[in-house]
Image 1 (cartoon, rainbow, N blue to C red):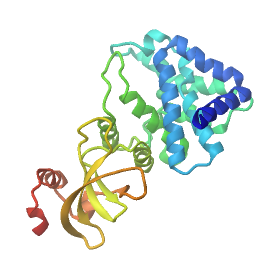
Image 2 (image 1 turned 120 degrees about the horizontal axis):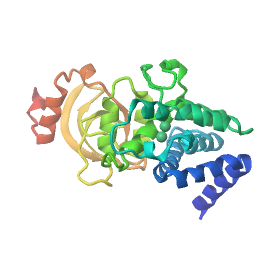
Image 3 (image 1 turned 135 degrees about the vertical axis):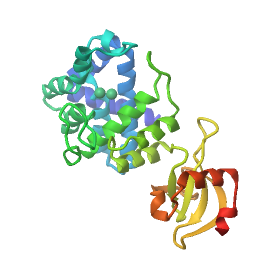
Image 4 (image 1 turned 60 degrees about the horizontal axis):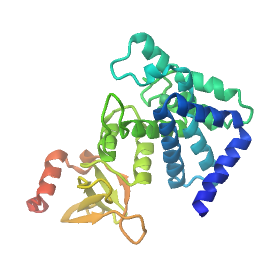
Length: 286
Ligand SMILES: [Fe+2]
Ligand SMILES: [Fe+2]
């Protein structure tokens, strides 16, 4: 009940502050069910990540509100374009790319709209290497909340089923996102992974116990992350590999960071990862 009450309080607060805008979100549902569900999902992911990052209650609310409103500009894009199974024409593409600015214009008319909601709405399609839209902003002009918005947005889109694609598993989505050089802020993306407790298989991570570990494939969708600890970071030596299940509670080991394989002398990281998975322990002596 406490949690449900909090949600209702939040919605109440948001309706009081900007009634028009919340009704626009409901409108989005009639226009396009996917965008509505996607908005709620991004809101949830933003709130979860903000809490994980240690943000206070009021800031966390603003992250959530920003997530909920980020695609409001799709109100102005025809449903036939939003749900088109095939490739978009140049004109349709331009129309879709206009949604951050359209959304911003709608939100800016609301008197008490938090700056964060305006920011995320306008900038959630910007990329760290400056190739995003609508402005092609350089990394240092993209705020933390907009960077997180970009991560939550793409994660939810990839893990959703659409008319033109199947839903990817959480680990597949994160693996792809991690591989897209220049798209996301890696620190923010890694925090996001920690907040949902999913990491791409094959990643090299550091554990709280100061061991390096390989993230293993998750056999089933909803299990905790499994990693294989194989290296003592302080001594820079291989250790007998040990499978560790990452839990939420502090009594257990946890994933505290990611590492660059080359910086640890793991030049053939894929080969090493394959040998670790096979249980080939000869490498410890090597
Ligand atoms: Fe968008
Ligand atoms: Fe979106």
